[in-house]
Length: 278
Image (cartoon, rainbow, N blue to C red):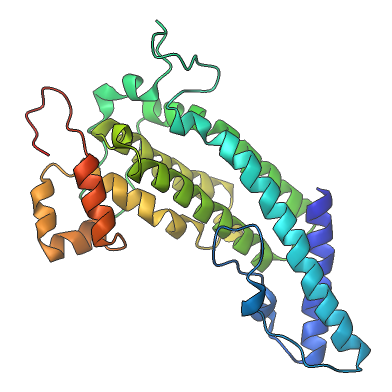
């Protein structure tokens, strides 16, 4: 709340002084982070020439302050999300035992085997989830969506500039995509049809959650999950040999490069007894 309050006041002042100086339009003062680091890419910012004008100096100081507050806010969010995403990485529901020998079976993979083929890998649009699947994915993402809801409430309560809020959530979803995609593509035990179904369900669930929460606050956040979505759909393809065709690759995974596709196919583990070939 404190950081959101500081971000709101500094970003509004920055907007007003920038307009007064004629150095930026409204949309140009929105903060945009291009990578997943906690710091802003200072070298990409427009620098002000030395001037004795007090307004210019104040504007420059405000820009640095906004960047600093925004960076602290993102840094705190990343730390929280890393812990919140552990249930997905470890495939355990909150409160479940991590032990694979547990008779209760905390693995969502074990619980979703029966429905692992319900996601459509050939469809470019988001599929719907059954009530059972939605409840499972919702439990898995509870810490993530609860934290995002708290962040949104803090932004709304403190009247954070809309473009800054959109940029924030787009960056958060960029982090979610990178964290889950990197885990998938670097672990052979994760490249399975069951895991792909779960991750595809995560994308579907988050899309619905944004629609129900208020899409105007999230900008293009869902497009940041495209790598995760396309990787999941690739692993769910019933005929992976079709990926040898450029047109098929463009339809299924247009944003994945050749190395990423090869890595996923190399690591892919077909379901036991399915007769499916790698």
